[in-house]
Length: 124
Image (cartoon, rainbow, N blue to C red; front, top):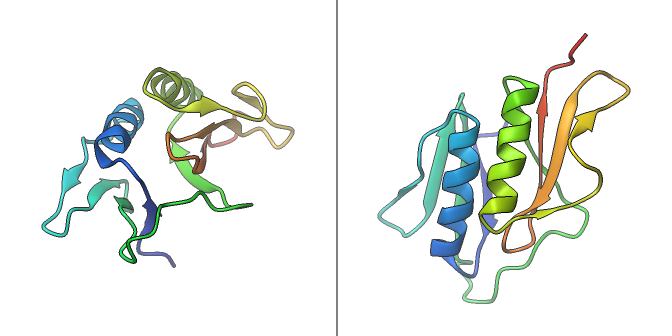
């Protein structure tokens, strides 16, 4: 259904450090800057793009919005969370854990305040 998710950043180099670390923790590749100055991360058929807002106003985090990213295993979830907190992200909600539905999840805010979650398939 979706072709990509675009989020705003006020500091693309800071965002690159965070997203390069978290995407490689999931087995993805480093981001690439396109001709329009957007960071692009492609992995497992999905695409995340990070850009300064085109209207020139500061980027702000979505109030109530969360971007969900799939992980292959609980180990990938833990690696993503550690990479994120080590590279400018902030742990939020609860520590990485199994949920009642069996999925293993973790939540972070990126350096610009965007809320992200990574989840693996149910363990059971």
